[in-house]
Image 1 (cartoon, rainbow, N blue to C red):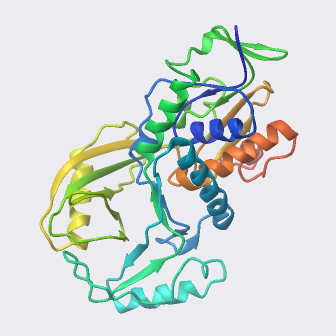
Image 2: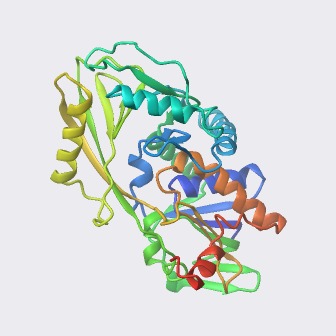
Length: 355
């Protein structure tokens, strides 16, 4: 019988964030995953504190950025690889009106730390930009594919990981915690992303799921050392390759790339760049999104040793460490979760017909 403080189901951004927080605090963990969810692996991984479409601050952005920066610095030392890249995000302007909207937004108190008032007029080969760019501050991206690969390697090397589909019938709830196939743990944390829908303990929670598709393009004439973000983002990789995304599809819940998704991305790319390009790869995944744009964190209503960490949506690289820390402190110090993330809000909101 193997005994742990935490059994964690899922090794996407939510799962490894909680694993790392628990290990940092000298708790023992074991992780299970069946490799069925792809959204964390293929994510753009952008660190962007502003929702540019609406010119609004990402919820608790400054706090999340601080926790995130410390988290990835620590992980880079542990995994001995670079995963967090501080890179400017530039918003391409298509008119004087868009410039004016940018400067109006930059006057908002919440956005002042994140929107530069200095117009960027640098010319990048392969992009026509007569109206210039606005720069979002405190930005970059995380190489999520490398992060997840390296972290799983670390877990395997330390005998803390097993690849398998979780068998809910094999879960026994005991007074001391849980028992699962020879594993005894004080707590079990489900961090399954969209896979939550197969979980009988939490499948009544309002996790919508939003499919996103991305492509890798090869564009030798595109000279870019920043991330350009308009209706899509273009993120430079290496060897004339660029990651481009993403689409939003609220109906299709499969992780299969589609021609419709590719066509949408190609059309948007052509709106931004003026050089030739070809599609080198095409990916899709279902983001774990929630209607109220807040994570799903907390404890099962009846079983006090069964917990959830989910609903990170499109902001997993920013939210992961903050939500993992919040759940850990809640469990270990018996504090209260912020009602904005606590799944208890769902029960309250159902009574008021919000969900």
